[in-house]
Amino acid sequence: MDLKDWIRDVPDYPQPGILFRDITPLLTHPPAFRYAIEQLSAPFAGQSIDAIAGIDARGFIFGAPVALELGVPFVPIRKQGKLPPETIGVDYDLEYGSSRLEARVNALEPDMNVLVIDDLLATGGSAAAAGKLVRELGANVIGYSFAIELLFLSGRDVLAHDNVQALVQY
Image 1 (cartoon, one colour):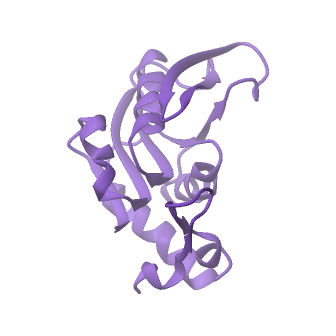
Image 2 (cartoon, one colour; image 1 turned 180 degrees about the horizontal axis):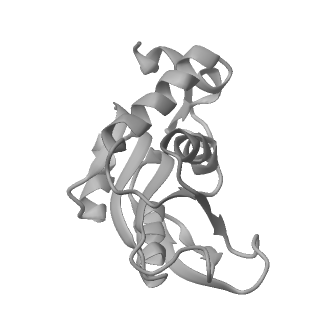
C-alpha cells in the first residue's frame, strides 16, 4: 500500500507558501491506518523496547497503537502545562520562538529503552527535545519513528541517531 495515496496536500496552509501534509484521510481509512501502524512497528519488533514516547499531539495518534502492537507502555510527551505536577521539561527553539515539552518525573525508569514517535519529522526540533527529555529521565533513546519525513528540512541530521525511520518521505 502506498501511504502517499492517503496523505492530502493542502497548499498555503497554515500560511502562504507552506504545503501542509494532512494525515486525516489516512486516519479515516482503517486499512491504511492499520497498515501505517504495522509499518511503524515492524522495524522494532523483537528489539528490546520498554516504552513508546509519543509527542503531543499527533504523535499520540501513532504512538499509542504502536505501543499496543509491541506490547509496551505508552508515555505521553506533552506541551507545557498539560500534565499534573511533578513534571520535568525541555525547552527548544521553533522557527518563530520557542516551546517546551514535558513528561511526568516518574514516566520512565532508568535504563529503559524508548522509541520516540511522532507524525512528522520536519526540522527535528521537537523530536530532538523529546529525545533529550527521555535521556534526562534516565532512559535510552533506541530510535525515532515518523509517519512522514520532509527531507528538504534535514530533521534527521538534528537527531544525530542511527535509527531514524519514516514511512513516507517528501
